[in-house]
Image 1 (cartoon, rainbow, N blue to C red):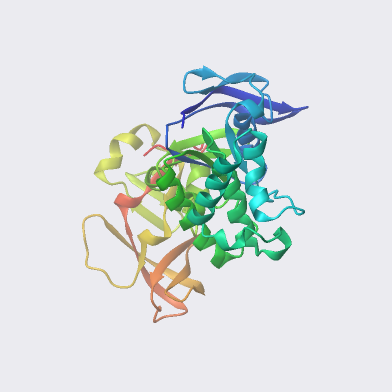
Image 2 (image 1 turned 135 degrees about the horizontal axis):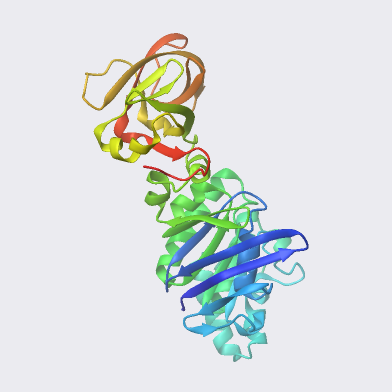
Length: 360
């Protein structure tokens, strides 16, 4: 188990910059999730850590040792791929054992390790089967077993659950979380699924267009997004965002007017007359009658659409030119027409419209 540090790592393919000036430190025993849309550079970053790609500039350290020039087979890392990459002509036992044989371990030690990880992942009854006789979830467990049997310094996982159906993914990610805690293994996990990231991560590194947008705990990236991209990418449904002008001590967007609360006055004091981006998460938009409170803004809107999710509904409400989504527990009594909307101004997020960065 080691810490992993990337110092100003950049990687290009021709004119395309896949990873740009990335600096991350993953602590010993930490599970860091690199989260971002397809093509953002997260897998390239993982491959650079593994030694499968060489950065154009920047350095990679395991603890204090510079491994930038160290080949992949000498870094002591194990990688679980999206495709699992298990050998179809070998039974499960041999799939797990082969890297250990290549490492030159004794047969009795190989047998002990294979049995140990198979029991840990509950696949001991599958050791004599071939991959074509396994389900997708079972193949995924074999791939993980092969990786951890190697006892790597760092475990790298590249979207290992993306080929599983929704229910199996729920079970698999819980198992990965428990396994990582049990092994206390430094783990770097890549995904485009923000729910997966929120559930698994000790910290999340949000990435877009090769650049790290924010690194923080799941609570930090959700409740204090560093910029508009993070605010929109994290959350289901994503944060409501709309443009508003700062004037008359209020945020004004057409028919919507929100008095600027005292805790925001200082931050917005030099923005009078300018337009900002205002964000509010759907769970902080409440429908129906509410007692009047100092921090509560009450508005009227028109219901345009109701998405029924069983235990809750996503209500699309229009206020003038602005469409807001609200999370509503249970069933909304009014499916169309006018509704009252309540927004707690302490839940507002304000972003600079030009730079996209968080103001408050």
